[in-house]
Image (cartoon, rainbow, N blue to C red; front, side, top):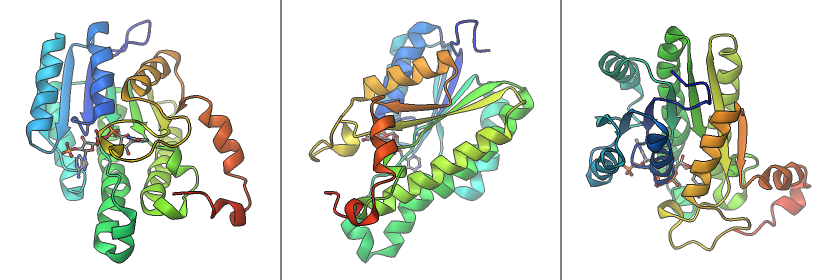
Length: 253
Ligand SMILES: NC(=O)c1ccc[n+]([C@@H]2O[C@H](COP(=O)([O-])OP(=O)(O)OC[C@H]3O[C@@H](n4cnc5c(N)ncnc54)[C@H](OP(=O)(O)O)[C@@H]3O)[C@@H](O)[C@H]2O)c1
């Protein structure tokens, strides 16, 4: 159970090798999170993430196979994980694909892969997981959305629209869970300097996986429902959202 100061004792991560998720696990385990289950695509990144969680001192640190695009498998995946490990205090939805917009505009199949991974696949997985959280009567679902979903830009509207869909879905799911003991927290980072953005010029107000992790932990402790990282982006996007389209479409890539 999440303790009196808001610290979860067990976490399931969908997208267990994510840098932001790993930075978050590195803050949760020393604060008495005992069980870390990292769900993701098999490979060295996932097994290294498990090794790091073990080295931090988690009692249980394991990888389980999860592919966000395997929509038909999400029900059985959630059943297996909750049967095997019991209740989870926290589920972090961290899988995500930035994609390559220029390539996607010429190849609808790769555009659909981004939309399926970031939105349809994760939405289906969240419903499967939420069913278990609802039955256990407690828990927090933390969803890594993005400010890119606040308003799609012409330079990355495939990714941006996938995040807009995920974000809207998460808001609705959170509202549907009110009164069940389960809460949804949406995290909207700006540009995070790390693997996903390697080689890109930072956008204004860049941040780091560690800063996002701090914001996630703080948000859990304070019961936040929406968190911007850095916080100034809440006000930046409150303005950006209302810029005239003729101005918005000139926003640089
Ligand atoms: N980095 C940023 O600037 C930024 C900004 C705002 C929001 N976000 C969001 O934050 C989340 C975490 O990003 P990050 O910065 O930690 O990037 P990351 O290190 O690249 O993590 C992305 C994760 O998604 C996983 N993934 C991709 N496709 C998958 C699939 N089909 N099934 C299962 N897992 C899949 C990757 O697994 P593999 O190891 O198997 O590839 C990896 O674990 C993402 O949702 C991202 O969109 C990131």
